[in-house]
Length: 554
Image 1: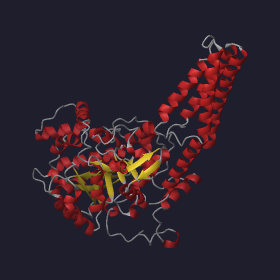
Image 2: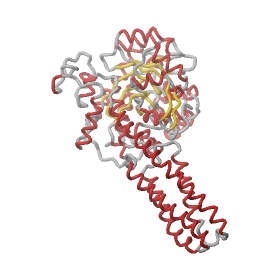
Image 3: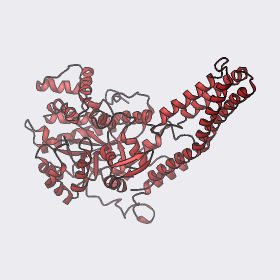
Image 4: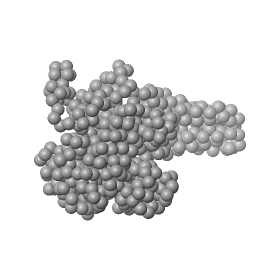
């Protein structure tokens, strides 16, 4: 692939196997995804002063400014990008490069969201701006096709919450619904600017059966999500990570509130953007980001970049971070991609058809072929909402390629599910047995006065066995899916190392020492073994329920 046309996404190794996975990007801002070199060129044409004139330094400036921990401060970086996008030519170029960057990221369907009202300070009207972006995306799709790559793109028009132009933007979206515009969004600061203040626009769109996705639950708390869902009827939520405030969950058990239950039961898609959430203060780290817990509970989460420039990220990088720091595996990535495709605003029959063909034809609303009830499925009926998950499961069992991607699924070297329950028991029994033997030696030497020479010989051998068995268990993911996993693993190994090392000659010289430490360690070991079966059963049951939830339809 030509890296001049399709540059490797920031923060991604060109040989990363995740880069080859087919992906869907639902929450991807146009003005947050400009290339730094493009900003410099466009700024020079418009006599706009920039904080840096080197692409690398300018990209670093955006990332540093975005790392504020505050959404309002984060949004200030858009003053630069919006400023250079005030002409049709600039918008067309930005949309073309945005599309090519999606291809480079392995994305085969992407929704480009942006706010037309912010690009009319010059001579452009909002209709002109929409046409310019559509032209740029069409050019990008054509260039990708010439290079043998396939991508579908669509626009989501955004109104700014702090302004009063939402009704005009809604009417704009309806005028262009047959020309590439598939959805409407509200963005901007949530605190003090509720979505319900724009009910006129949202009611108009709902009456016209036009889908909406609203930014909510990023910094406005549960009230912003309740407002977006209950008052405004959003069918998708941008970010939505504040939903965790409506639940009390520990290790997969607990209670969830009414709003969280509503989102879960109706499988309302959450467009989660992990890196962006850390920058705006909605999350502290990838490890503790709510997306993993929400996934495990069965919420309909999708993985998105939000603003590629500000976060120096891509869908590939977000997925890689989740794999390395949150224990995700390839099945999790596939389910997130399938969920995103199912939540896409393009028509259902377009999602089912192979990617490719004429873009205008794919996005027409006048469709008479492959409509639900008239498809070529056996019996002539449409599939039920949850059938695609069962079909994907059956395809995997048969070793067939996934239907959620346009090509054969590549071989990807990623960590899969942890060891089976039997493997976990065997590993832990090896450790437990070794500790029991060592504890017995302690008691024996204390009672007989045999000294520590026997303990020394056995201890040195046991130390290697204990540590290798423990590391084998950790390496295979026995501790990967619990919040207490890493500290527990570290404490376990410290205990093993201390115990094995303590049998060296001269450490304990009095029989009283042996009689104290032997029973103590033996008691600790018995407690571990006592709670081990219940813990492993709960762990295995949690995985089973997670897989079942993933296979059920909404």
